[in-house]
Structures are given as structure tokens and as C-alpha cells.
Length: 205
Image (cartoon, rainbow, N blue to C red; front, side, top):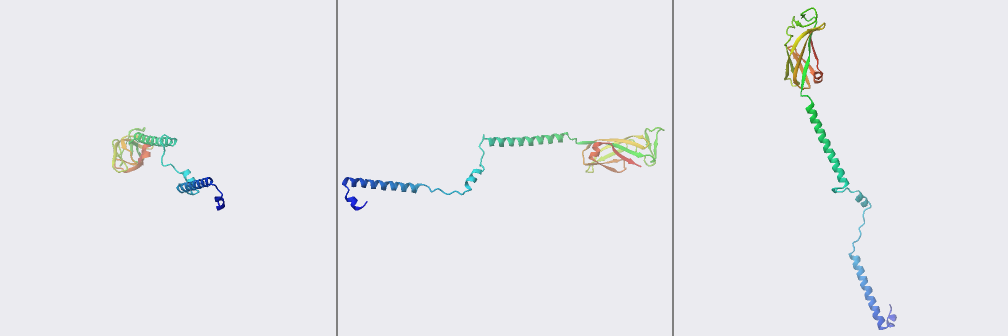
């Protein structure tokens, strides 16, 4: 407003104008105060929204679907471990701890074997083989070299092949391999699989 306009106004108009000016100044101060108090919005990096969307939760709420799935998976794993432990224990209990070592010692024909009759039957030996007879000790040793069991030869049975003596040694502890010696004729080594299958074969002559 210029001077001429002011001078042309009545007292009432001037009073109204002054009130209007005070109201405008008050509104301007209020607006500036609100702007000063309002926080300035910060610019977010373009990847911030994506990172927030894929952020892994730090905890799982109890009773949620995820919690139930985790509990089910953990329970299944525990049950599987317990089942495997029980199966292994049962297998250990079922596995035999001893073996029966059985076989035949044969002295072949032409080694001085003498038979009791013309038909093949009980036979006895001579000519350097008279130590091989019924009752001769059969010694079994395990892989450690210690004696694991002792048995004896049975009666000799004659055949066209020679004179055969069967033997059986019970309750021999399980071992990776075994050595079998008849009398003092030297040791012969057999695997655990061979002993498990039975009917070991030894021969002289």
C-alpha cells in the first residue's frame, strides 16, 4: 500500500488494515516455526529398500509356521540319530563274539599211512607221521599271536586220497585272521571269512 492509499482511508479502515497486517505476521511466524521443527527427510540409498525386504529375521516367533517347521525338522533329526544308535547297538549285540574253528588235517597216500582193513575206515599212520593221530593237539591263535583256543584231532578216516583227521575248536574270539597248528607241524593262516565259512583244509605229505 502506498502513502496516497493510506491517506485516503478512514480511521476504521486503517484499524482493520493494521489488524490484518498483524494477523499476516503471526501466520508467517507460525509457518516458519513449523518448518524449523519438522525433520528433514533423509535420502535412502536405492538398495536400502531391497536390503530391508530380504533381511533375515533375528528371531523366530514361537507358534509360527516357521517355528513349527524348525521344531519338526529338529525332532526328525533326533529320532533318526536315536534310531541309528539303537540299530548299531543291536547289530553289535547280534554279531557273534566268538568263532568255531573246524576243519580237516589230511596225510595224503604214499606218506606211510596204514589202514585197519582192506576197506577204507579208521586209519593209523607211521613212517614219520605217527605224531598225527587221534588226540593230537590243535592250537588256534588270533591276530595278536596269543593262543585263542585249543582242540584235538578226531579219529583218522581212510580214503583213496589219504588219512583224514577232523577237528573242532569252540569259543575262539573273533579276530581278523587265525593261525592253526596241528601238533608241531607248523602254523597255517586263515582269514576270518574262511573260518566263518568252516571246513578248513590242512594237509601233509
